[in-house]
Structure formats: structure tokens, C-alpha cells
Amino acid sequence: MDQITRRKFLKIAGGITFLSLTPIGKGLFAAPEATTPLPLFTVIPYIQPGSASKLVDGQDTLVVAWQTESLPAQFEVRYGSGKLLDKTAKIVIGRRAIGGAGKAKAAAAPVEGGGSDYSNKRINYSAPLSSLKLNTKYRYQVVGNGQVIAEGYATTRKPRGTAIRFAAFGDNSNGDISDRMIAYHAYQSHPDFVMNTGDNVYESGLDNEYARNFFPVYNADIAALHDGAPLLRSVPFYTVLANHDVAGKGHSCLRKKGASIVSDIDPDDELQPCPVNCVFVNEAYADFQKNRDSLGYYTAMHLPRNGPKKSTFPTPIVGNVPDVIAEFMDCAGDRFPTQANYSFDYGDAHFLCLDSNEYVDPTDNTLQSWIEDDLSSTNALWKFVVFHHPPFNVGQEHYDAQHMRVLSPILEKHKVDIALHGHEHTYQRTYPIKFVPSDISNASATNSKNRRIPGTFTVDKDFDGVTNTRPDGVLYVVTGAGGKELYDPGFYKEPKNWLHEEDNNVAYVSKFYSEQHSLTIFDIDGKILSWKQITETGMVVDHVTVTKA
Ligand SMILES: [Fe+2]
Image (cartoon, rainbow, N blue to C red; front, side, top):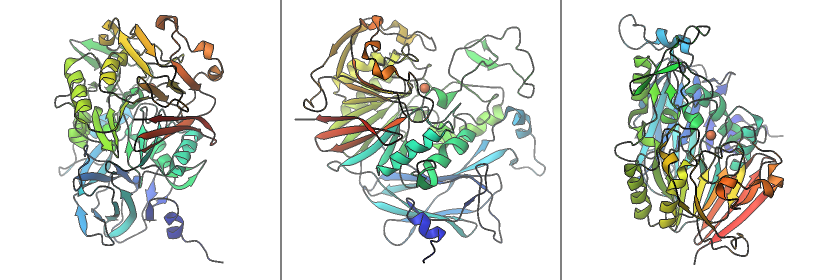
């Protein structure tokens, strides 16, 4: 009987045809022994969409990226659309501090003979592939110190007039088996890309958490229900910035100093009592003193950079560790803070992706003008808006976070079809909604717990997505059951619970599902858009079709 080789095995396991890196535990991967040894890999090669936004043949982008421990090495990425790997990509290097506050001081220590101290760092490598043709399969090869480490392929975006499929889910990567089950089902659907709805990694969006909880799941070597899937080596992954991508739960010892927040705690002394003037600051911010590897979103992800020229609400950064923050800034480059808001096209669809975190005021004129410009300048047949905090949701956890409701009139004006969210660890689909806010003052109350926006609803209850497929209004979909523990189990059976007095008991939610983790598979083929909500055990719990004239 033929023995299956590792090469053959990997060939059938996903978009990679060769991987010489062997997992050795604790999220580390080793290259074969060689004359010039390679450092251990903390993240094996993966694909990202890169900076391109509009669909222009010959100007599309992809990025091949990976991360190693701190030893220097010589890498090369070769790629090509035919049989030959006839092009070479420029490699960009960035350094990230390893997590753990206690190492903050060591990172700043001078190194004998000058140069960088590598001992507390990881090296992020990225190879941007540019000037690519649309809808074209590109093969790539990662070479380290002369050895071929990985070979794979990825396909660029599809042009207008081409059918597309994508998988959407959020609130994932907590290290749970459910993450892997959802990754497996995403892979099984053969998506062109993944659209994550935020809280992409738990608990605090750290670089180290990406290495432990994210990449091993969505870039697993095999596709299996309890292992995850080899998605990321060939499938671009888009995501939006959410609360757990910025910070985790818990009290930090912080105080206000003028307009800024400063951290008072000594990172080496966990037992130190809070200073007298310490206050609980209920704000989303990245504390680099507490977590030196904060904001992995801006260094692990390579997404379009067509957001507002001057960022309106950049992710707040605190911590008295200037060297660590400077290194993060250098690694992120122009991705920080621009990558918080961006848009892109894929096939006949346009996607507007927004940061909806607690520090964002969605009434801001500059932000709204950019959103209006973006939505009015696309000629896409289908328009999606993606942000984490759902404006219309009846769950018990995050009902108060309604600040993004102020954008509803803009979404309606520009005929947005679907708004996609996470944050609630459930699946919720509204009827088509038109909403007129009556008091938007809480939307500007950034970092407040109460951001309720009252208003008047017009709900299209004739739409059922089966016999009536022409919605009059925006369909708001929460797909936040991507892996983290579910909210409101059993709640889905009781439509009478899906009403809120503050919303005048308007029944705007049509479907609620929270019994299993789930993901959404969207198909767009010309004037027909449809989606299925698929559970971790493969059940279809919702199937909706939307059509255009
Ligand atoms: Fe969230």
C-alpha cells in the first residue's frame, strides 16, 4: 500500500503544497536542521488581503506573512501566477515585544556593541505582493536561509459580475474547541475570503494570543472538526477592530492626567496596592505597560488602508513604556491607526468596515463624511457595512451599546443591504429596518455604559427571505457565535423575550439562535444574495434569500 508522505498529506489539506515546519509544542514550529539554522517560527506563513481596496486588474494585493523568534535570518518570498515563481517580493521586518509586563524593563536595556536587543522580541515578517491580476491564482514560496520553508497558493479578488462566497463569524479565538469547529465548517464551505465581525482573539488582542489562539486554529495543518482548518494559508481574512482586540476585562490602575490616561502600576509588582488617586477608568484603551504585545490587530493583520486621511478616533494607547510603544508603532507602520476603518470590493459587493469601539463618537462629522463618500462612490450591486457593536439586538449582554444606530439613516440613504455585527455571542437577524433617531446625545457619550439611542422604527414584516425576498430597509445580522461561550442559551426559543420597552416593544428581530456556535456562509450571484447560518455540528438554522429587481 502506498504510504502517504507529509507532502502529499499537506497537498490535500489546503492551499499549501509544502510545509517543512514541524510543530514542537507551545505554539512553536521548527525548520529542519541546516548549516545555517533558522529560528523557531511562532506563526507559520499565512495570507492577508493587503492594502488594495477598489477592484483594479493589475493592481490587486496579497501579503504573505509569518513570525519567528528573535534570531535573525535571511528570508525570501518568490511568487508567480504561472508555473514559474518568477517574481521576488520585498520583505518587511517589524519587531514586537513578547507579552508579560515584567519584561518591560529588560526590553529597554542597552545591548553591548549596539543594535537591538532581540531577547524579548519576536520578528514579524511580511512580503507584500502587489500589481496582481484579479481572479488569478498565485503560487508563493517562502525561503529561509536558503531552505524552502513553505509553498502555497492564494487567489486574488474576483471582479464585478463574478459569483462569490464568503464566511462570516466573530467573537472567536479563545482557545476553545468551538473555535476549531467553526474554522472547520468555514473551510468546508470553500469561501473566497473570511469576514470576521470583531473580537478576533481573546482576551485582549495580544500578539501572543494571536500566536496561541488564532493562527493554530485557522491555519491548522489539517481540516478536522476538532483541529481547525488550513484556511489562512490560501484564504484572505478580513476583520474589524472590536473591544477585545483593544483590551480585555478587568480593572487597571489608571488615573487621568489632564486629557490623557496614565498607568500608575509597577508592572513588576502584581501585589502593589492601587495608588490612592487610582480610579476605575471604564474606557477601551491599549495599556502597553500591562501588555507589551497589545494591539496585534495592527501588526498581524494587513488590511486596506483607505480610511479617513486623518484618523478620527485612534485607538487610545497608555503606558509608561515609550520604547515598547515606539517598536509597536514601527511594526504597525501606516496601519496604525488607519486600519481601524477601511473598505474593499469583492465581486459584486462592497464592504465598509468600521471601528465601533467605546471611544468612537459616530456622530462625528469627519467620520460621517468619510462614510457617506465611501458609500456613495461605489457602484457595487450589494453593499455591506461591518462593525462589531450591533445597533439593533435584543440580547441581554450588550443591549445598551446602541451608539452606531445614529448611522442608520446614512445606511438607508445609500441603500446598504446588510449590516454585519458581533459582540453578542449569538445569531440574530432583524426584519428590514428603517430607523429615525429621536435623541442622539448618548452616541457622543464615548466610554459611557449607557449609549442608548431612542427613535422610531419602520419594520418590513412582509419580508421573510423565502417567498418575499425584497427587503424594504436594512437587514442587521449579528453573527457573533464564532467560538467564545454563548450568550442567552435557551433565549432563542422565546420570541416574547425579544422585546424592549425602551424600543416601544417593537418586534424587530426575526430570528434568534443561541443553542450552538455558528457561522454565516454568504453567496452572491448577480442579483441574488443568500446566506445560511450553520452550526458547529453542521445544522442549517437559518436560510435567507434577498433579491434585486
Ligand atoms: Fe465584543
